[in-house]
Image (cartoon, rainbow, N blue to C red; front, side):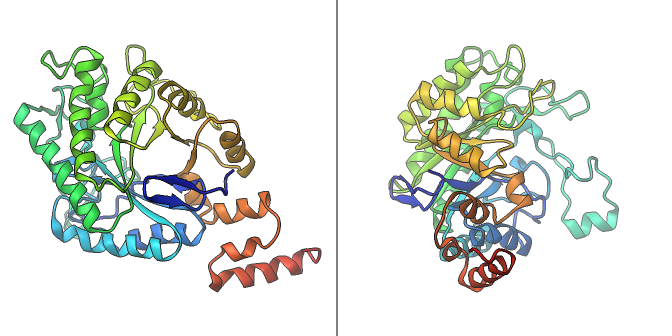
Length: 370
């Protein structure tokens, strides 16, 4: 099943192996660079059917760090269009994840771990600093800055930013869009009692906590062309007592489905204090629970590394798509290697023509029986 096609609205993916969004912290003023072009383009050459561009901020203060991609300005369309065009020309659909980091914004670049940039580096890297916004004035950690609590005008501005970024995503030629509602970022913050301490219509009950995420989801789906699919990435559980539960997420997934979302990308966690049972395939049961509970297609993600594992997930009905992130970084040709492992016949024709014949000849030298 890994190499069977799947159709979502007007988009048919050639296989079920897709690249999940992965922040590269390599942009300046939100602009994609050559790094993004090469980083993402190699996955199309490696046989993935869909490549989703990293969390792309819908407003400047919605970036996780100063080095994140953004799509709040028309000038940011051009380099993203170059990426989308290349992906499509080389056999992969082009997707983009739109996001707002909320209280997790203005964070250090992860490989630094802290703000250690020199004055010279700050200038070269286009360093910026700002105060984050959030559902409530509650910091992510004890050492994090206290965010500004959003009022209704602030929420409207962010919602409008999501719509504008959605329109720019279409102008850039993307085939699908993903609403980032996971990993402790803004929409997940509204959803979770861990971060949402509001006492108005946007806090308290699950219905209220879903209100703003669903307002954004509705506005995005209405702005996105009807023939193009929309995904939503959700943290199915916070892994924190008193946080979002699987049952909550099934309710949320049902609401997203009713708004016209075609697939739920199932991940988990995002808040300080989570007790995550990290192990191979640890999030697959979450995708299965949402798939069955909400009767909606799902993507499974999280330490899926082996071809036969991916095949079994699909064959057993636990998910409809396999999303790879770190494994894709480790092996950008993962689908091509999986094809050779799972299929017989002329598997080399799936490679780019510039490489397939050479790899085939190499393999024949090493194994004359081929």
